[in-house]
Length: 77
Image (cartoon, rainbow, N blue to C red; front, side, top):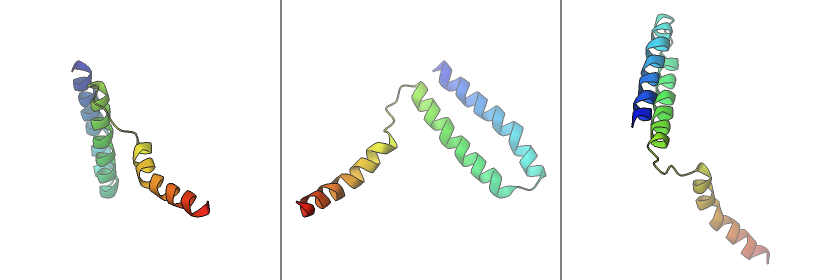
């Protein structure tokens, strides 16, 4: 739990450090992308710190392409 709080605090510090610079340069799109990526990264790292099972992206790819592979193999036999 302490590690999750530390990750959150570091993320907040990063946001307070970079967002004002980007706001001064009027980089609205960059602020949005930065915030979304920081939020995703923070959530994933907090999940890892709390030992939550986070599925691999490879699981989704396998789920999608396994039936296609089986179909192609069945056709070519």
